[in-house]
Amino acid sequence: MLNKNWDFIKVFDELILSHEIHLNKPDPKIFEYAIQKAGCEPEEIVFIDDGLNNILSAQVFGITGIKFTDIGELIEELKKIEVM
Image (cartoon, rainbow, N blue to C red; front, side):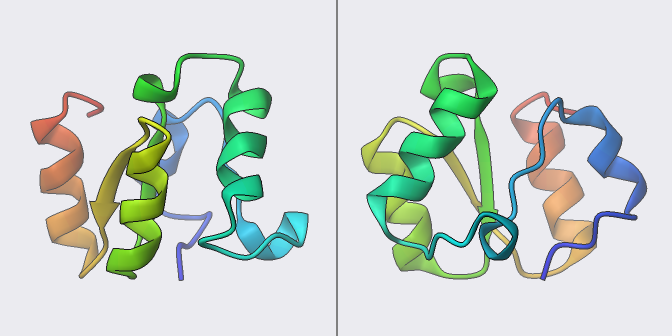
């Protein structure tokens, strides 16, 4: 699970956690909610998850998906897409 206290979290304008908004992945409603809440184009949103099916669902909306394996790999992936 994503930890809100990780230092890299501060690079994001919004942080949406499914358990906080009571929407389950890969329900399309969570991705629609994220796009509306972020107020930007889907391509500007980064979705981080450890489930490949959830990432594929996000990509249907044009959202960039990163498969979480560990914090080091996640930071490297964020650097690749120039988020960090």
